[in-house]
Length: 204
Image (cartoon, rainbow, N blue to C red):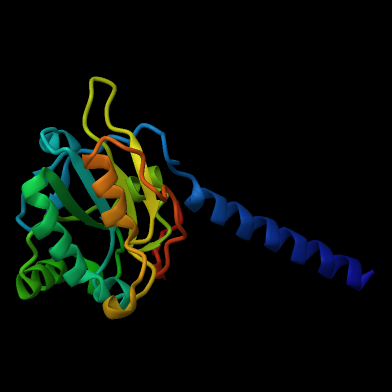
């Protein structure tokens, strides 16, 4: 009798965990219309909308944060991406949704200033944008294609490359996807498994 009760409790707990994971896993897939967003505050103290980047030929939307070692390891690579692809019409946009003390806006401003970010760094404490896209870890990349009357399409989802250490990365997924996008082609690899620290979602 006791064993059956324990099994029921364990099953209920597992169901709750699966439900929680599912709520965080919902989001977009390659080929989907990119969810719109607006009014997200940046380290520049201005509110930013997806529509303000309508002239960009492609957007590299990266969910990241301050505290995660993996996210930190990719800071310079994001700057280099903006430097290399900005002149080609691509815009990198970093978004943080964690509400940990080390990840809030004041600390974001410090990080952006120290690292001299050359791209917008936005903060959404409501976490809505991350839920809409289905961001799971930091960093998690969503490349959005050229804006049309129907909006932008998601053309790539996943990791920046295949190694946390830049010098050991052999597959440059985001660069390959951007090169294809700018050439009017499909990315050679449209989806990869992102790796990093989990996005710190709060209970609704």
